Picture (tube, rainbow, N blue to C red):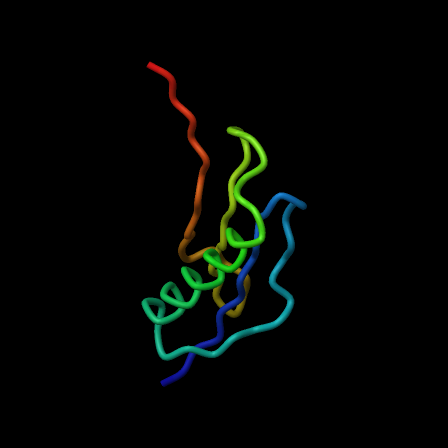
Length: 78
């Protein structure tokens, strides 16, 4: 059985709500696709500073959050 998922994207430009549903067999397959989406976003540019994050939030057909895949830039000095 297929289910609909929405991807809300947070990047250096801000938050973009998921307006278009995507159909996957289950949450794990949707998470795998979210990882690909996150990698594509990161290819366009890493987080702009240490307080920003790149993130794909997966939501169900009612826009209820189910999972997040994120990338945070961390710079540490000894």
